Amino acid sequence: MQKEQSSIPWRELFAGVDKTMAVASTTMVLAFVLFTVLQPDLANVIYTGAKQYIENELGWYYILTVNVVLLVSLMIAFSPYGKLRLGRDEERPEFSNFTWFAMLFSAAVGTGLLFWSIAEPLSHLQGNPFIAMDGVAPNTLESAQAALRITIFHWGLHGWAVYILVGAILAYFAYRRGLPMTIRSAFYPLLGDRIYGPIGHAIDLLAIFATLFGTATTLGLGVSQMNAGLNSLFGLEISATNQVLLVLGVTVAATVSAVSGLKKGIRMLSEWNIHLSMVLFAFFILAGPTVFLLTIFTTSVGDYLGNLLPMGFWTSPDPESQWQGWWTIFYWGWWLSWGPYVGMFIARISRGRTIREVLFGGMFAATLGAMVWIVIFGGTALHLQLFGGVDLATVANENVTKVLFQTIEALNVPWATSFMIGMATLMIVTWFVTSADSGTLVICTILSQGNPNPPKTYRVIWGLGLGATSAVLLLAGGLQALQTAAIAAALPFSIALLVMCYCMFKALASEQVGQPVAVEQSEAS
Image 1 (cartoon, rainbow, N blue to C red):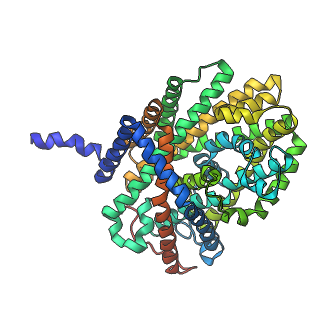
Image 2 (tube, one colour):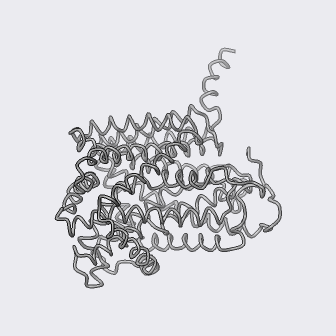
Image 3 (cartoon, one colour):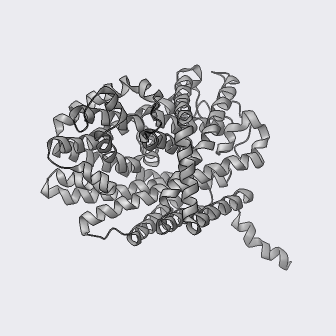
């Protein structure tokens, strides 16, 4: 009797989750963090070596993979299977179009765009292979147009296709075939019931790894920008200690949001993010070069679409050049490494939509949103650099976290500068909270074998664990090594994603379009 009573807490600890997955994922995370913290030099050598190998030897593979994913997305969307509903045929979307887009965009790229929408165009303005091939001089209006085109390309259809296709595939197998909402379910046409064994565990562990460390890395980078914003507002010292304190604050907020659930915390924060962004957009347009922004937006749309295929398949012929590895390969690896996390979150919020709605709505609406953001923020900074006498490029080169706030100050609207810097800093917080709580929810969903409402205890554990991971790595100086590790993690998932595409085609081939949905597994399985 005594033995039975002592085992009860353990049973409660693993209630609602897969015990094997819970133990294995925790062990994996602890081992990785300890290795990175205790052996930072060796870890950095290993991670950087893996990243350099991918850039030098497998860059062509990443480029080909992302193009294949975009092609598959378009093929499925335009096919008769595009009208299949993700769920029963009579179901309708759980969320409105605005709420769906707000949550999708917030979880996926809001934080990254705040970080790079100004810094990246300023970097490309100073030189890139495309203006060199065209004989365009750096730091000119022509190079500014090329800089916006390249930035939009990195945040456009190719990257979004990764997220949206993963989301559509997972939603299809979960809501139309009744399989658990986990990455392993996408392999059912190939593995059958073996997805519930060791192979399935390995697939889901890879997804957890990419989700946790991708989110932790982004959180670590984001608090650096928050610190810069608070430095501009209140003179708060930029230091590792203050950044760790910011991580802890964001972590608590994200954990509370994750515990409150998808329809409360995450939904409200996501809608708040979009509303705040619109206010900041209006400020940049009205206080900045309005006519220039409207003109360059129209030009950028045509420029991007006209160069989509050439840029999509371009690989650097210069073995000594590191530009493509620093930018395009880095971005494709980053999109791929976040594929499991963002894809599963998109699947979670897409029940009741058709496959075509998810693929078209996700790819094109999100690309348009990113394009608007980049042109408004990046275009303003480029105009100030070229015609306003403000050297923002040097700011971006020296400290990328400060360039957003320096751009706001350079617009020289005294009555609004402090308010807008405060709003931008608040936006960084809310975007990161949304990403962190979405990541926590995804990890807990995987551990609970697809339960859309995983145990709150695990949401707290993994929410705090995500923040603790970021804080420890910040103190240990391991963020750069962690970032390269996350990119390297994209390699195995890229292979998995190509297999998922094959499985999706195989499953769709058995569909009877126009016939009632036939559920192969119960949703509780």
